[in-house]
Length: 101
Image 1: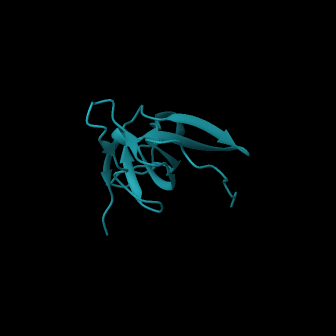
Image 2: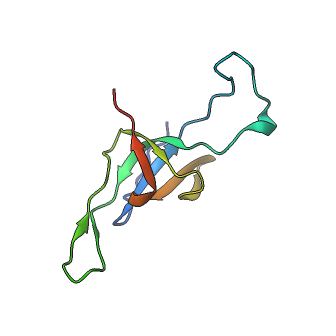
Image 3: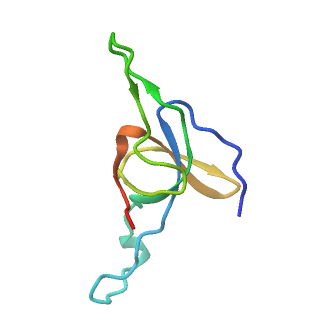
């Protein structure tokens, strides 16, 4: 496993995408050409709270914590390749759900 020495800037998360299932619920195996971009991933690092632009100087806290599995917007985030592996920097507001146990 690659050790990442990155701390996202305020308002961002570093996510390792989880590969989408290549088999449907009924057991049909999908070809690689049918694969969609993953929308699920594990949070590897969390940036600090983001300061809002409003005059009250409110702060947006991260909607999740390091180690959480999240669902994010399909086209959200900025891809980055580190040592041949793809990761995403995703804005706090692009997180749609946090997986619960």
